[in-house]
Image (cartoon, rainbow, N blue to C red; front, side, top):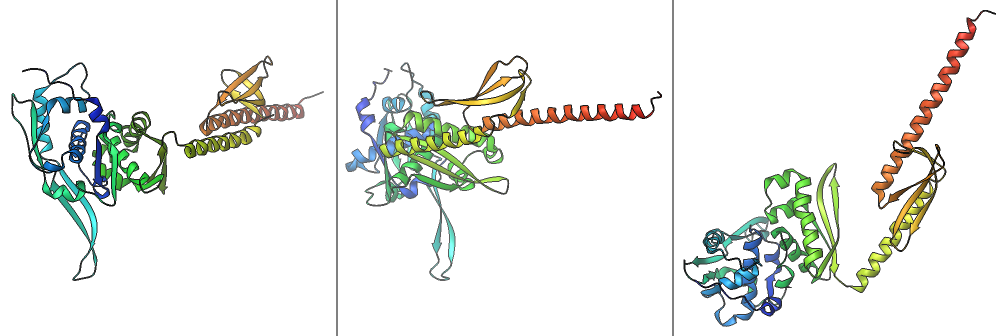
Length: 360
C-alpha cells in the first residue's frame, strides 16, 4: 500500500470548529488524538453542507496530518484501535429542567453516542463514519449561543484537557468576558479527569492546569494570564481563569500596570529591611543596606553588607516567596542575637553568683 499523501496545510489553517456553547461544557472523555480527530470531523461540517450527518469518508492522510505524525509515520493498526475507542464515546450533559406537573426543578442527565457508526477496513486508505443525528442541534446551523475556533489553534496542543479548557475560554471571550470562575469539582467532572487528579491537587495542577497554561500560551491565539484558586476552609474549591487574546493593546496596558503595581509593593516591603540584620549560613550575619532595581531586566536585588569582612552580597527578589525567604533570614538573625544576648546575661549572672561565694 502506498503512503498517503499529505493534506494541504492551508485547508487545516482555514478549518473552523463551530459548536453550541452547551456542547463546549458537556462531558466527553477523549484522549488528545481522539479529541483532535473529533474536532476535525466537526470542522468539516462547515464545508460539507450537502452531506451533513451522512456517511462520510476521512482519508488517513488527513488524520495522520491532524495528529502531526512526524517523519511520514504511518500506523494502520492504530486506526483499528481508535475506531474501537471512538465508537464508545458519548456526549453527556447535566442540566436543570422545570417539571411542568410539579413545577419543581429537577436534575437531568442526557447522554447520546457521538457516532451512528465508525469503521476502518484493513487495506483501505480512509475511515468511514456517520455522526449521530441527535448532535445536529449542537453542531449544525448555529444561530446563537455558539462558539467558533480555528482548528489550527488546537492542533499543536499536547493535552486533551488543554483543548477542552481552551474551548471554554474562547466561549467566554465570545461573550466579552475575560475571566471564567468555575467550581473545581464541576471542572474535573466535565474533563472526566482520573480519580488521582481529584484526590491529589498537586497532580491536577501539574498535569491539567500547568499543561493547559503551557499549551494555550505557546500554541494558540490566547494568553492565559493567571489561574486563581479559591478556598473553602483549607481546601481549594474554585478556580478562576484570567485570559485574553494575544497582542491585545488593552491586555498589554493592563499587564504593564499590574507589573508596575507589583514592583511598587515589592519595593515598599523591601524598604522595611534596610538597616536590619539577616543571617545566612553561607555568609554569616549581614546588615541590609539598600535594594537595586534593574529596570532594563525588571529585576530587584537586595544588598547586604557582611559583618565579618564588610563585603557586599546581593539576593535576587522576584516574588513574594523570595521575601518570605528573606524574612526567615531576618528571623534567624534575631534568634541568634537573642541567644547571644542570653548567653551574655547568663554569663554575668553566673559571675555575680560566683562573686557571692568568693572570699577576699
